[in-house]
Image (cartoon, rainbow, N blue to C red):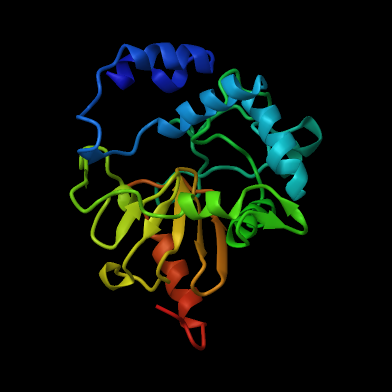
Length: 254
C-alpha cells in the first residue's frame, strides 16, 4: 500500500501526510517495530511547529551553528564539481542509474525528507556526531540539552518487541543486543553482537553507502562514506570498519 500510494514520491510533506493518513497501521502500536517513514513524519512536524521549511530550520539550528558548511538538501551550482558519483552494487565500477538514491540534487527538493536526502561531507558529519558524543555541544555552541541526547541514545524497545522481517535489512532488524532509541539504533549488549562494539554505542546508516557510530564508552565517533548503493549481499563495510577501529584500541571497554 505504501508503494502503491508512492508515499515518498509525494510533491510535498503535506501530501505525504495525507497519503499516510489513509493507510492502516501494520500492527497494533506497542507490539512490533518496523523500519518506516517515521522520521519523515518528524520532518513534517518540524515544519508545522517552526513555521519554516525543514531545510531552513536545520540550516539555522544545526548546520550553521556547527559549521557544517557543505550540508544541505541540494548541491549549490558552485559545488557541483565536488559532488561524488554514486555507484551501483554490481561488482563493477559503474554509476547507479535508478532507485530512490538516484535523485537530482542540483535543486531544492519539493519534499525534503526527514529520514534522508541530505548531501554532506565526512568532515561535516563528523562534527555533527562529535556534538552528540559531547552531550549536545560542540565548540561552545549547544544544539541539544544533555538530557535530550540521553533520551535519543537509550533503547526504547522492551524485549517483547520484535521487528518485522518483511522490512528488516541488515542492522535494521531488532535483535538480542541491539535496540532502537529516538532515531538511532542502539547496541545494548555487546556480548550478542558479532563484531566489537562498546556498550551504549548508537548508530545508523544510509542506502548510499553512508554510516556512522558514536561510542560513549570508548569516546569514539566514526563517519563512513563509500558512495556505493548498499543492498543485501553487499560487503559489510560497517563490520569491517568496527573490527579495524577496535583492534587499534589499546584498552577497549566493553
